[in-house]
Image 1 (cartoon, helix red, strand yellow):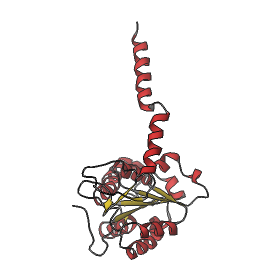
Image 2 (cartoon, rainbow, N blue to C red):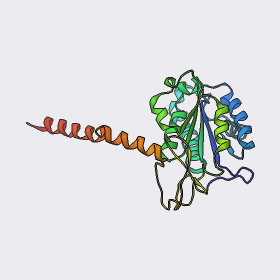
Image 3 (tube, helix red, strand yellow):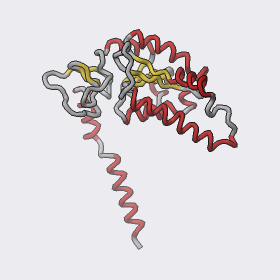
Image 4 (cartoon, helix red, strand yellow):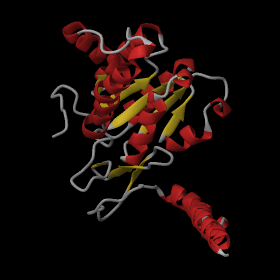
Length: 240
């Protein structure tokens, strides 16, 4: 059962960003963002706050371990960080907010969190702190639902979304009333007449359907080409 807070019914939003290479584990921006989200009825999942609380209760897990203790450090990170954080995303998050800055570039967890969110059809809203969109890797751009150059624009966007649209309905779609959330552009589009009564993933609005159709029809399938290429190479090398 997904974690729910009775005071914040619009959905749980996991705050993703640098920790290991960020000042104070990236707690500053998360605390400020949490305040804004609660004011709009969203429940922030502040991993920095949770980590600080865990450390206070149970002590440090790996930060002061020497290189000679590499295997224990890896085991700790796998169990207490990778597994825990990804479970919190998969099981308890309706969306991610990602602050993309230098601490993210120096680490690995944030991009991994974005990938798992994409795989699980969980919206990813990225705040680009760099001057241009080119500063965000193309792969990461592709994982996002919407990209913002300023966090205030994100707050406006979240405030205008139909209440509850980030949450999934009984069929697994991000749906509220007559609105559904497009996974490519992030717009909440209105669907008339019948609602979807099965899982639709990815979910696209009509303009994005045309974009995706062009993508599929204008180029040969890259994965299929790779398979045919490798099979041909394998058959050639198998010849005596």
